[in-house]
Length: 588
Image (tube, rainbow, N blue to C red; front, side):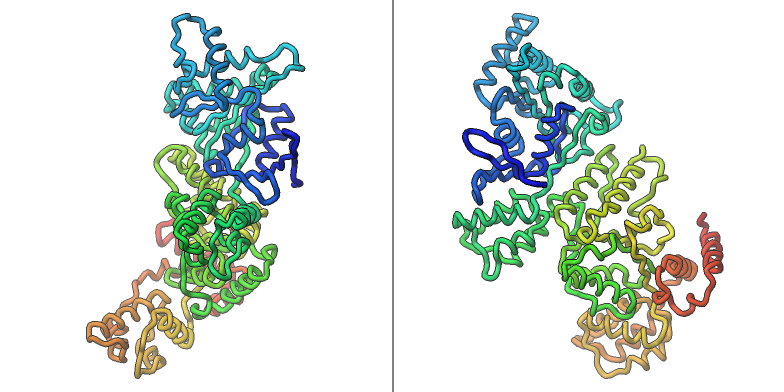
């Protein structure tokens, strides 16, 4: 979108944020008078009055000063401060006018500014309507900005709202559809971080305009950092420049970025890559309220044994990311396979290969009405700000649910629809990469598995041959940093010929390591391995594992991934066997 300018005080002022352009355009069209600004509204907003020179302000002040120039009538409200105005003169004019409009001579002037909306809003409404000029040439703009709007028009069942909440909801709805407000140039702007925290009766109304305030992109972060560098207040470690720092700080707002730069300057300690990595992890996890977890790994795909086809796919994806070709990447991956095949480890290794952040969804569901949707909205907004980023959802079949869940007032249905819609937004191709990990891909709704969402279906299986098991053994030895001495791995597997999963073998190696530690040795001997393998009994879930194998085979989009014993099975037999196993296990 091209830059827009407004002319004020004999100078052209640049309007940088797209959200501000949208608000100005909607206001100019005179088609609505109730706006909800949501998203990154607690940040400091940059305003570039001259090339490379920024001033920073709150969103309320940005609207008042930059968009409306602190002219006409601009008032504010929140539960803490009650009614206030952007200029003392405006407040005095209001108090004088409200006294004249009061029906009783004994009214307390404090009521005009009360933080109780049932007391102050009627006076504000009378005042606004009284200021509408009869002559349209003497137009008077009036703007009412309500902060922390979720506190007075919260989401939730109508029956659970307080009298004050219901009063505010009805009042805003009435103002939004009252021709006097629209024709009289009276605008109401509600501010909230999460749209889901506001009553759906307002957010879904056609009379309401919803505008998202995004996190700053790399261009804005770099401009602000260069501005601080120009002032001599940006200390960077050798080899780190403003553009590099801007690239690695995706997901941080300007308030956090400014704080880190200021702390660095005050302590006379240059910002380094490692410091910024740790701080970014800490800040984003805090901003997400514990709903996202950064995945840090010291592994890459070279630490994965077997699964050559899957590794090749991920290596190609890693090359595409490093070459700056996100357009060729799938929107997401479905990774299936029985327990213990290393699905989560594979994604961790891919995270170490690609060099972009990888996060894991944590439980965002709560028992409170509306809070689950609000939590999810916050997480999705952070993912957009962090892009490019990988997102891992483990046990995806249980975590994501489906459209037909019941018993929670429709929350699961709304959450599922919210995630499915977000995953299918092609605007995020290559920017937000999804990894749905599951032993039971058949339980994941087709809405999430179709093309345009989790497009690439990959499957991992147990090692079939002795060579595969030996290769896996060697890889796990390297992963666990074991020192093994004086024995043949081939002989070991001839003697103990089990169908080991990766998790089984890792458990055996950890036991052998414990035996060597108890003997005060730092290396593992043949006797340790034989004792550990001889004593180990793999958990026996034959029907469950076979079912997990078969449903994974059915999901595979390439024959090369499928073990030889399943390649020869007709698809119809696989489907019949799946149904028989489900019946045997008591599933529908």
